[in-house]
Length: 81
Image (cartoon, rainbow, N blue to C red; front, side):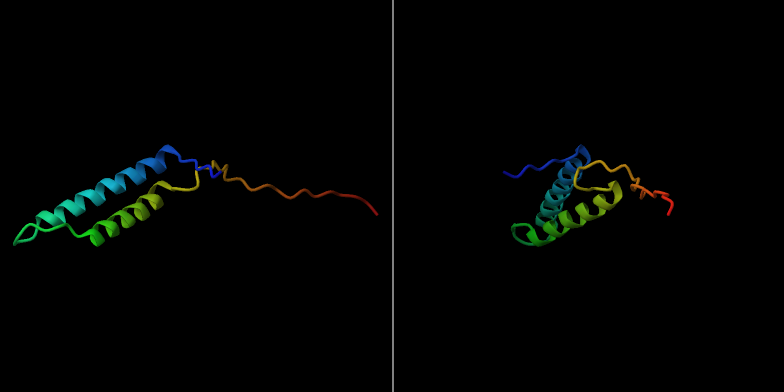
């Protein structure tokens, strides 16, 4: 069984990206002249992917694990000959 763990920041990034994709899809449907048509799905998907990418860099989206930022120091033993 696969267990995925999301932090609250990651969930906000994904939900915000989906909301922006929905807005872009509806805007592309309503903003052209002529008969009513479906929205541009490719543009909406690109907007979602771009939003996730930008916000993940901005908020430091990761795998949900907490890192301390400290690397373990190597141990040095001084033993005489």
